Image (cartoon, rainbow, N blue to C red; front, side):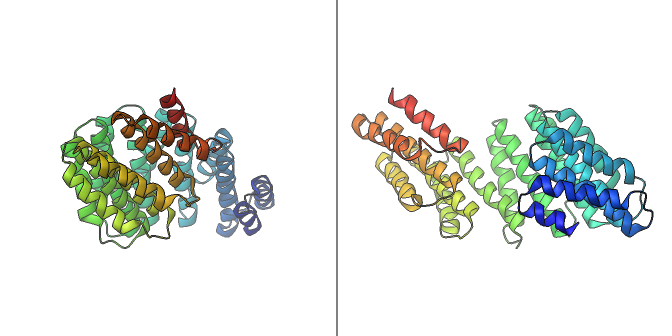
Length: 348
């Protein structure tokens, strides 16, 4: 089993699957708990590797092997394998566009393990329930998605375990996102504020990611409400907290805030300040190698070009669009290519 996990870590996924299958063959028919674990875990990891290869139907088959063979188990390790297999099965069904089926699997998982005395099983159940909201949103059923988030918050909100609290934070953020998608901006601002107020001081990276996302999205919604002065102040707070971080996700948050701040400055007719903010974002992150950050650099250049064009500064606008093409035309990342295509369109 360890050999298979090591091969998976090296991204030698076909070899890992072969090793896991060998483990299953060796322990087939075993009845003692240790040997049964040696069956369940490789079945589970075969599903993981097929999923990473984009072979979602094959992954589902592997997860079904675990679920079918061990659903009646009472051993904690086997129940954990069953719960995680159900969770991942739902995720793979969702990848295949079978969101109604994925929701059904998540519901079954939540009903079975949501009240378990075991923290890991309750965490998996909470995670599955939040995933229901995500899939409902993808189906355009946002009111139902909000109700599911409320269900998670009500059921798990009083939990003291940090892993379960992370799912509560995720549900609270998702609730804000659904309200924002419905243009219920005042409610969205309140929802994002609740995430920050409740979890800002919790020392957990998963929870802090939700806090950071909530702050950015709150600022966006403040802008939508015309509360641009508040939005700018919040963007400045986000930049100060993240711009010098060693974590790429936090630096990405900082540049996104800098680019978004320019829009609020523009809304206040502070065009020179808006252009300066975009220039600062490009200068600060020009050398960052991470594709999501480079996508924000490209977005800054496109937005600068559009603002210059609206000001009648056509030559400077064209120069900004051309810089996008010269720097990013060969990039493969979808978010970068989106900006490249917009720059091309605006130059026509």
